[in-house]
Length: 158
Image (cartoon, helix red, strand yellow):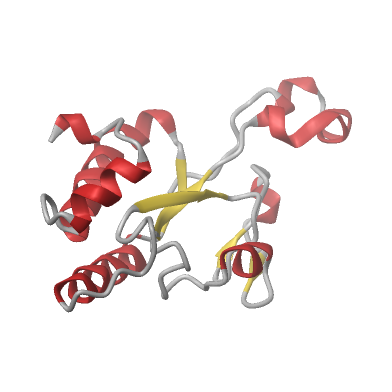
């Protein structure tokens, strides 16, 4: 399955639709990679695997009935945590914003037409939220906190 690690989303979607792999198997593959590498990389700062597993199971059940949600049916992905995603914090890499949780009407909800549980119109589902590093916080953050703080990776750990 190592060839899956860097395959395109459309290739992964085709493998799911051709039943070469199930959405649950693909999700578990990526979750295992996350578990293996994330402690060092801290790329996934909000873990939503329980929602992603439910979505993957639904994707497999829908596919068994011949229903495809969209071109990315069953493909797991993450959303940068600069987007507001209902039910999760949007910190922009600033630990002081850890309680900045949106519950409805969020940017990502409007952009993706979804909350955490339903599949989005393209058929993918969210396995987590990717963090932002100091470079995304900008000059105002650096002026406020000082360059030594702004240069550190302040992303919360998942």
